[in-house]
Image (cartoon, rainbow, N blue to C red; front, side):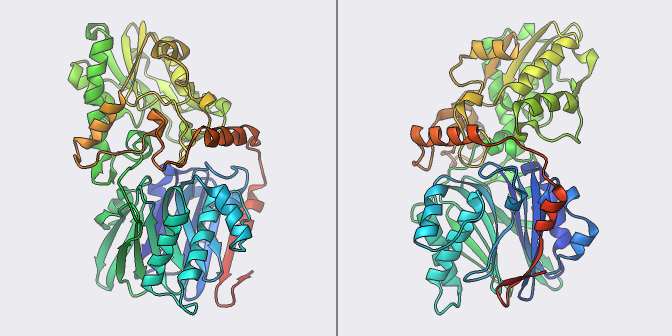
Length: 514
């Protein structure tokens, strides 16, 4: 899960990209980057940490140009140690290309070998995004006529990317001297949407992972980019689009609606907020079947993403809804923090109880999902310490039993609390008196009732069915073995890491300028 932006404007875009990345910060807190273009020169600045920490005034001044892309990173493929893997990535042959990627390629190792042996391209990091960039560069070279690109050859290159790449990818890319390219994998697993802004000096375009960036930056939503589709905006601000996949199908990641996306986002025509309300309404039916409603005094959400579901559940059950936890918003999302120890410590720093809402009460805690169980266990303990006489727990999502290989950090089955355990065993593990899970059918229904023609979802973390058809036990065993051998996150010299990523890319001579 990462956040990507692409802008083609009539005025400098550095501030626009910064503001957009701030809106998408929830999609990645590990690193951030912005690339802009001015004439035949790309300007790039990336660094580790939050957007507000990566970009200072001097960095913003060094990002001139009226078009560019931005990225916030949450690492899944690639090492969290290496800040050289902060995006956007750059390649200068045969065309200067900057690329930002959200998702994960499932055949990255195969492609890396092909790049080295067949395409004569060197991959310098462990990031699958660099692999994807080089595949795109190679396909552009193959499609170009006399090293000159046109719209047809650009779309032909994206067709080549779809033919070779497997997995999830939403992409924004800058092609020097030509324009802004955005495309989405043939299953539409990761979200991508674009909008426009009519100004006195002409039309401007913005491509984003989530519609909320369009809303806050003053752009009108045009539509989602379709699975397999490519959109190209040339330097004259003319927009071209083409379906580049042979058999595209809508199969968006259902976890976007459960947890990843902001509630004020609309993904593929479905309001994330309304889908979470529906999750709560359907979850109420499961609660009725499992726990005597008269045994629940109060419904309390685990902030923030579970709040709509908890509110609707409380209303459906006619039980008081109360805010029992106060969140420290300056602590990161525990789901995307590396290491069980860090997640456990962070829960206590992030949440504190409102004691009077727990003391002497039988409480039903509602969360969006239970992944590793670390957060849930700590929260149940906090509720009991605050005086709750009974603690029930409800999850707006089904049990997470399988790894997600499409860009969410659920790499090992051993880490997932639901793997190999019954509901009663999971309840005992987290210390709850009873546990209620949403069913997979009800979760899908919460979205299809809002868009009836959207019936297929990438829900592999719940049902073990991998939509791309290339993930089996051998693949899962391989990535789990690789994950176990990955070194723990350390403390590198952030200044050196930042300095290595501050550059001006001179495209006229194909080299780097100091």
